[in-house]
Amino acid sequence: MKILVTGGAGFIGSHVVRRLVNGYPDHQIYNLDKLTYAGNLENLKDIESKQNYHFVKGDICDEAFIVSLFEENKFDSVVHLAAESHVDRSISGPKAFLQTNILGTANLLDAYRLYGNISVGKFYHISTDEVYGELGETGKFTETTCYKPNSPYSASKASSDHLVRAWHKTFNLPVVISNCSNNYGSNHFPEKLIPLVIKNVIERKPIPVYGEGKNVRDWLFVEDHAAAIDLILHHGRVGETYNIGGENEWQNIEIVKLICRILDEKLNRRIGESSELITFVKDRAGHDFRYAIDASKLKMELGWKPEVTFEEGIEKTIDWYLKNQDWVQRVSSGEYQHYYEQQYSQR
Ligand code: NAD
Ligand code: TYD
Image 1 (cartoon, rainbow, N blue to C red):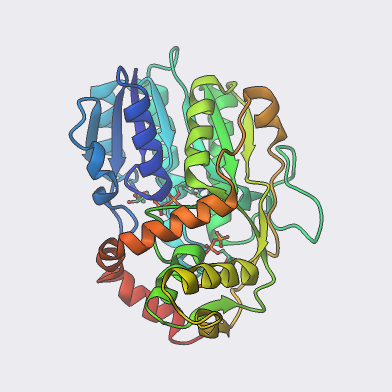
Image 2 (cartoon, rainbow, N blue to C red):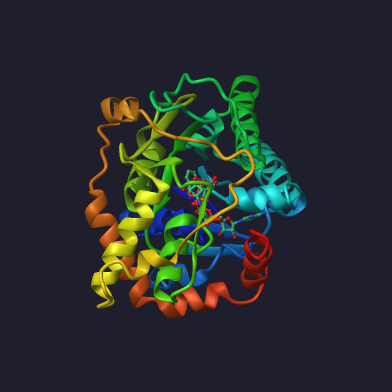
């Protein structure tokens, strides 16, 4: 099997590539990534010399390049993760999201339709629960919840989900989609809530909490997501959608306080010292109140369940950031630093 993973140098993609390379030595795993600010080959150092791993630098928006890559390789399956992924960036600059998430997906779908080994494999599109919009205090997203995306990011992901469905219906392309809740774990770019809080606590910088910190997210350990992706790639039913989530809802402020408490202990700080860094800042525009996933379809059909409790996962994650502060420094320099100033200097 020849499998193309897009966005494999990013946060979730690197965990997926590692799992496929290590778990399927007979499969050839191609990682196609543009290496934007969020993509980092350091994330895959441990597997880069494996015989069944191949890195290709390229942009999914470059149609001619994508066509020639598929023509040459005739991939059996595609696991499509490449995307612009940060909601705040989509508010300050939506165009890149429309380009990569919508047009980039269309290029891949068409190249797979024309040159992929569609009688053997499938086009697996990795998406987000944010396409469903926001929930109030109760309820959960199921696979039949109506799409109601609120941010430019989620609207672009919703559009790409629709394209994938359309290529299935119109061209009979074998596709599968999964919509997952918020991930956390190692190699997470420190612009997202959890790694940003860990970084700022370590560096004794203010911790920006949007609004009153009451918004709720359902957090899943990234390796549990990678395990679900592996399962759906190999056993998911063509034409289906699977929701993936951690059944692990937290208000932002509670998660921030938890990280502060754990780091006070690990850094031998006075109890309560890190939480003094919490700073309530202007809310995100259109900020979705709550996300929560009903993952029972995936559990019942394919037998998936999260293996890592939140207690274990957050401890592992914090330990990883403490041990890899040089990684954090490297990815935080340059472009990211400039972006960080733009986002937070006015808040
Ligand atoms: P990320 O931003 O960490 O990584 C994205 C990767 O895509 C990077 O390696 C980047 O270099 C690459 N990329 C971006 N534009 C590209 C282009 N034009 N051509 C080729 N490569 C390009 O994102 P992530 O958090 O790992 O998310 C991966 C996927 O999972 C995305 O599709 C996202 O929508 C989805 N998702 C993420 C979460 C989450 O909590 N992070 C939850 C559910 C779904
Ligand atoms: P984020 O990690 O950006 O993921 P998403 O917006 O895709 O859910 O944000 C998670 C939650 O944390 C969200 O409710 C916004 C909030 N948040 C803050 O309060 N402060 C921050 O600096 C960031 C980045 C996010």
